[in-house]
Length: 471
Image (cartoon, rainbow, N blue to C red; front, side):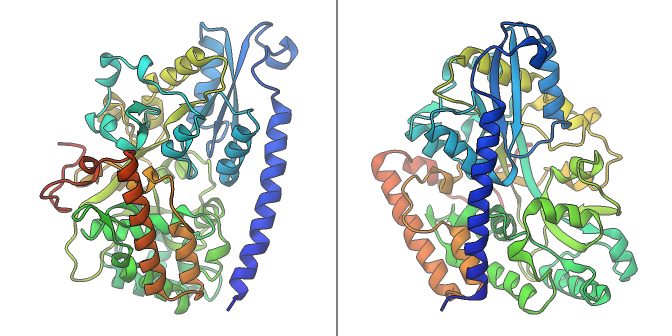
């Protein structure tokens, strides 16, 4: 039976589609393609080549924005980078641009875009001809072992960022509630959240999750499952080499209980992550699970923060053994196949890699280039940074298997999670369906060669003893 929440989703989808069309059209009005910019527009003189560079989420005043300005002033290719940011609409805008044969020259692998899909559709260029051994040696070795960045043996992007999640908590609200330190177990987290919510009397809540943003489902469920040694990312079990979403049941039931017991914010399905972070910074919530980029967003006033806060490892269920924290590499840049200036595009990407230390110095997440992460570059005075720079007990899986499936039938996991959360389908039915459909897509990928068995079968794999980045 349709629920009130499903009706809300239909309305929201319509609004989002209208917004995508508007933003996409606006972006194209700002740039008509790779043409020289007039001196009065660029300020750099005539006959300079313009490259369009699009990202999902980075302000013009961010490190990336500053590096773009610096590159425009310094580069010897006579190039101007035109930088655009699209937020939650990013994936739709990119897909519209690709379909219209008007893509940006350089764009970010983010927002649900995958190499498997983009390379299969011949939308991007491989980077192999640009990469030398000296260049590779400046990265952690695991970076080039990440199979999701390859397609048919060719490399299409190099990730820039080491990303992972922690529990972040409002130390002011904790002190007011008489809570000492962060929760270590999920049972404890629920009681802490309940106490803060009761104290808030509707003005603030103990826990929040932004379920309008699809990645929020994964950052909650995946982190609980991986750190407990149950599963890898998105339902994939490295011990069996198959998907098993039913192992996520306990974590999903826990999240639902936070909602049904009135412990967390009641508008979770309507909250997107940017609004959620802004409201956390205003003292509206006691706890949330978020990424290591949060240090810089609060610390550099990209998001106004009026509270004191700290970070801690994601809690686990009482009685579970604590394993390794799950990390992944992301924020790679792509070169569009339709660009007229592939060499210039690569030179810009290489320039960003040469200046990765600027990100670390500004409190941004650790980078995939080794020298950027030296201790002297880390601003230890930033709130929450200690747990966001400690990767001693962390794991990087060799492949994001879910991102290598190009022929999944039916709805993806986040849509099914939402239906379960809204009470539209039983949890066992929904998770069993995901297991069947994802394994069918995996078998298809194995049959057509886009994934090989050696990519997903690791003899003797153990979640508690698998390698980490510092070894």
